[in-house]
Length: 148
Image (cartoon, rainbow, N blue to C red):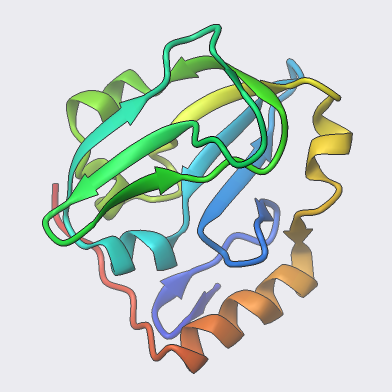
C-alpha cells in the first residue's frame, strides 16, 4: 500500500509525524526504523550511529543518529527504553535504509514500562494510513528508493 509512491505498512506503529516505525517483537523488544517518508526527506544516507547496547534512552533522547548528504539528525525516541542492539548490517551499509526502509531497521530496544505502554501513543492501521498519506500529500513528498 502506498501514498505518493511512499510505502506504508499498516501492521507497524508510527509516531505522529511519521518519522519512525516501531514493530513489536515476540521477545518483548521493539524494533525501530525509518519510514519511507523519512528516508526520502533525508536523501542518501551515508552514516548511522546507534547508541551502545545497555544504554538507557529517556523520551526525547535519540536511539541513533543519521547523516545524509543534506541532513544530520536523530532517530527520535518517544518512550523510556534501553538499547538492545543496533542493526550491524545497516551500520555497515547505511544506504539500506534508502533502498529498504521497512526491512532495514535501525535499532532494537526494550521499553522500561513494557511494549504495550510504549506503543500507546503511536498510530497503527487505518488511522496511521490516513495521517501518513495526508503528510505525503500536504508536503508533496514523492518517495523514491535509492539503490544501495
